[in-house]
Length: 101
Image (cartoon, rainbow, N blue to C red; front, side):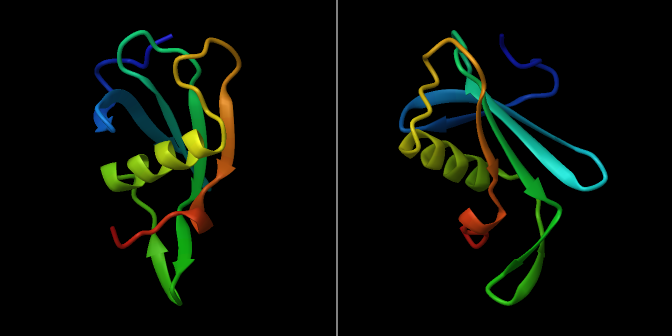
C-alpha cells in the first residue's frame, strides 16, 4: 500500500524513487519508507527527538540526508523494497545516523 500523496515526500536513492513520511508523538519520531511506484515491503524506523551526537545535544529532524542513510542501512540489513510482505522494522536509528551530512 502506498503512502498518502498529500503528506509523503519523494527521495531518489541510487536512481530508485521512494516515498517517505515522518510523524511523531511525545517521545518518538516514526519514519515510514516505501517505493514510490509499486510499493512492496514498507520500511519502519524510529528516532528519539533528542540525541547526543559527538558530545552535542541534537534535536532530531527528519531530512532527506537522514532518510537516505536509513534506506542505505536497511538495504544492507536485508530490506527488499520490492518484496511484498510484513513491514521491515529496523528500530531506533539515533546512534546509527551521521547528523552532519
